[in-house]
Length: 354
Ligand code: PMP
Image 1 (cartoon, rainbow, N blue to C red):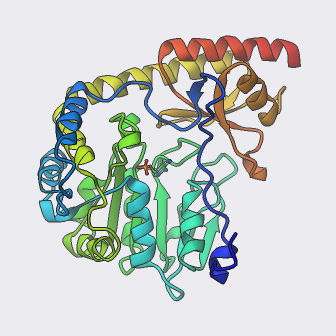
Image 2: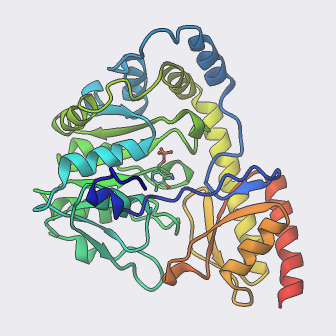
Image 3: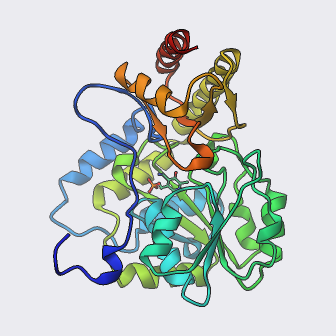
């Protein structure tokens, strides 16, 4: 830390991304990326755009917004495009929370919500999940705070129903409810259509998971036009060229190749169910996942031991040290081959450890 850093920043604990080690080639099941490459159409579009990099990108993201509006059956002024959905979440903390209007989110959820709240000096309440890791919606009803809920939640993979989200929305008419749908394409119902009914709903989504574009950094928010204008105020006050030319082109092309995305999602869901079945046969306890990952613990091996032993064997999964979940690991669902390697290695570890 330099002696120039301002007081507040010196006390912040930044978000810790999943490790990206370079010492050897791992089977990477730790950051919920897609195991499949981007659509060939996205790759071609991005390469063609590379030849125009002397020009700034379109700050209005016109073509991508048009394509998104068509795909999600909303109007163009109901969409904002961002540099990964982390950015729209950051903008939402900046635009819709302050010292008076704090934030609320589950105690176990995407770790960035707490980091953003601290970064922007926003008071926040972490509402405990139920014992079985489901979200109890009662504390959110009429809470008078800006609410952030990942649906499905991470790292549990458990989804709320649209009816439950509607209860939260209708009981908080004067507060923004942000529903983070990073993993929605793996079997959870989206609440995008609800933006027409509730003017206090912001839905965020990403191209990082189901569309295999994590490295391109592309996300978007969908909400009524007034909310989108507020988010654009933050965007144009920080970085109007937040989405680069190659990413804009890749995103629009990936959206045009919906069949590729849908096929990959179907395969990941099949692989998730297959892996969950095999893990259950080996004695693992899991939460019911609607996402591209499983959240699993084994009564006979500690969470950290399983994580370290798998890493030694070239398979990376994600371990968290928070006390409530430290016996669990989050395992990204990959290809069938990757899952079989994982399962083989786990069965050898269980033989050694139990
Ligand atoms: N929300 C959740 C729940 C996530 O797990 C992630 C991925 N780490 C994000 C948002 C952000 O994804 P991205 O910035 O890649 O769009």
